Image (cartoon, rainbow, N blue to C red; front, side, top):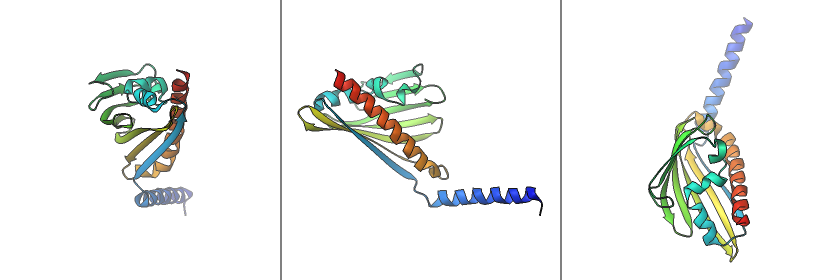
Length: 177
């Protein structure tokens, strides 16, 4: 048999195998990262509830310092929208505050336009551990359509790493002030 035909069959088999794996793989993911910060819970919450403060600690927001940003509404309140349009790495999208449980958590919806369209839900929760120590939990959840769902393990690892960097940046800021 012609070597070219053999190579085509091997490539076709690999593509079919990848599609089968994607077909049976999960389509949802949830990643949660936590950090303890030596600061009172109310101070921590009052900082993380303002989306504009993410400019100072969020790994993704800091990807493109020159990106265009728009704000609609009152920061820290439901309905506030933070929009961005940046370089290839930063992409384009918007984050909307969906709910605020004062002193406890803030829930947002992140809508991506590029590099890939999609929606994720982010919950930031602050839990007092003592008068001067607070646990911050960042949780992101989303769904990826077939066949892109095959990338969930890779994306989950990347997101977890970026969330850890975000947490360390936040800890540094809040413990220094």
